[in-house]
Structure formats: structure tokens, C-alpha cells
Length: 202
Image 1 (cartoon, rainbow, N blue to C red):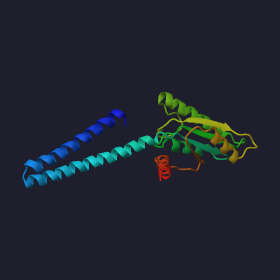
Image 2 (image 1 turned 60 degrees about the vertical axis):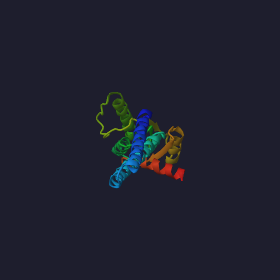
Image 3 (image 1 turned 120 degrees about the horizontal axis):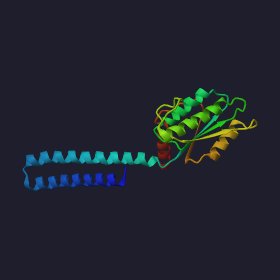
Image 4 (image 1 turned 90 degrees about the vertical axis):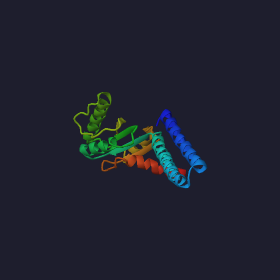
């Protein structure tokens, strides 16, 4: 929510509060008892609307504040097929929370199919970012265009070493790891960040 919209909404809320209090004062001073009772109900209704608006603003501003955290995702692939990688990347690109980068690390030097597929995915995301064209690989409803970083390890590196490289290379505030069998709900990363923020606050 922009500062101008926030200020305008606060102004509207303050006006409603002043009007409600003014009605209550006038009715208690000049009006009949029946009119005062009716006006009291109207005042309560107005206050209810005001409180509901204030709560909704707090939720919106909180969702907005969550975007201050940048997210990196580290994917270590070994002997998986390239279609599994496509499904996982599609799942990540369809997240409600934007990702900063996805690091794809191939630890199987003998099977380079995933390595070449990762390069195709990166090229297609760059094309979509520049022109809006989705390309031949089905990546679904792309909601963010993170940077795709690809690494092919040497034969003597294991999964643990690959993950260590991914954590070291990543630049996000939050780093997540996934394997090609991972399935995340569209709001999964956003809810994960909310939960982490709640645990830090408590």
C-alpha cells in the first residue's frame, strides 16, 4: 500500500470516527430517547466498520512488509530425469511469493540431461522476462522471474558439498532447499515466511 493511499484511508477513518462521536453527542444533548437509541446503534455500526477497516489495513501492511525478505532456492539434482526438474521449477515460479534466484546444481557428471534442461529453462525465463513469451517448456503461470544460476560439479563432489556451494553462492535473506520430488502449495513459501516471522516475534 502506498503512503498516499494509506494517508487517504486514515483520513477517511478519522472522519468516520468524528462523525460518529458528533452524532452521539448531538443526540444525547438534543434528541429524544428513542432517537438517541437509534443513533447509538448507528454509532456502534460505524465503529464496527472502522475497527474492521483498521484490522484489514494491518493485514495488508503485514503482507506488504513480508516482501522485504528475498528468497533463494537451492536445488541439488543427481540422477533425476529432466521432467522432474521442470515440474519443480514450474511449482516454484507459480508461488505467490516472488523468488530472487533459483540455484540448480547438477552433481551427476555422467548424466547431463538435467544440466542442459536447466539451461533451457533459464533461457525461457529470460525470454519471458523480456518479451512475455512463454516458450516451448510448460512453466505454468509464471508469477516471478528469478535469476537461474546453474552449476555442474566435478565427479568427486557429493550432495553435501553441492548444497554448501549453493548456500555460499546464494544472496537471498532466506535460503530454501528442494529436491525434484518437492511439491509446494502456491502460498507455501509465503506462509513459511509468515510462520518464521511469528516465531521470531514471540
